[in-house]
Image (spheres, rainbow, N blue to C red):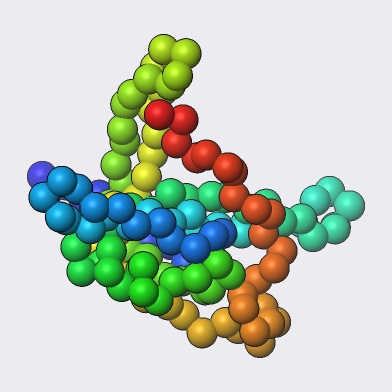
Length: 131
């Protein structure tokens, strides 16, 4: 049986991308992307919850994200889900989920989002990966 590990998200950048380079010079760019989940509560009032996704990209995809994505931009990302294990500063074992992007596209904001994207999302966590 074949396997499939594919993630597709459309959302908004929570902050500008961050780029670093490996010792061999390979580019790695990370960005936090918010997707909003909307529903109506028991009283019929619309509720919204932001889900934050850590996206990591390498090579050409990393270049595209670093050059084109900015805080508030609407984006479309395809990739695979990856889990990383490690320890935080206190020695506690942690697992982090991230999307390893293989395709990323900046999207035009919808008319209700305004000029720079959806402003309803709360700020991303200061440090989404504790290790």
